[in-house]
Length: 166
Image 1 (cartoon, rainbow, N blue to C red):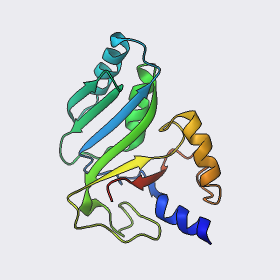
Image 2 (image 1 turned 180 degrees about the vertical axis):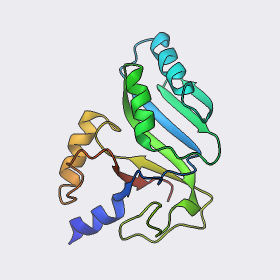
Image 3 (image 1 turned 90 degrees about the vertical axis):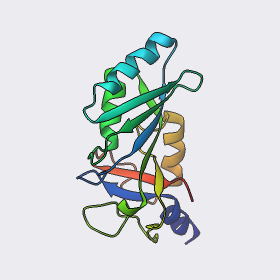
Image 4 (image 1 turned 45 degrees about the horizontal axis):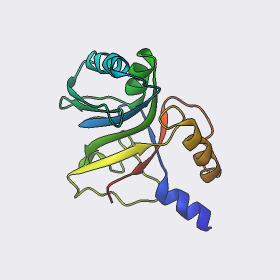
């Protein structure tokens, strides 16, 4: 029972069908970079996404902060695809959405066993699926979330996440 309770609090499931409406920003830590030219390739690729307002780069941590225009409908796989087009991988992805997006509606985020934090201004959500964390982390999460049937499956429209700012 403790394991199920832990998983319910730590891991939530959402679908990508219009669920990521109003993503304000995405913080991406990329892996595989060796020089500033690598960083530049990712920067250029992220700037090709329609609806990107700006991209900030931190070369010390290989972090790319993507600020998006209002009323976009982007899912995490858009960022993953663009990082991979540049020839690199995501080591961590955190998206920031308005607190009002998390609710019980079928077309929005659907947390499992969690009350909706509607009063919060912004919510940061870390994605735990393969391709959005390092391989080492993914192996760890496979063990941790073994009882969550969808976690080991590779479904492009299902994401497992944790609300970061609590």
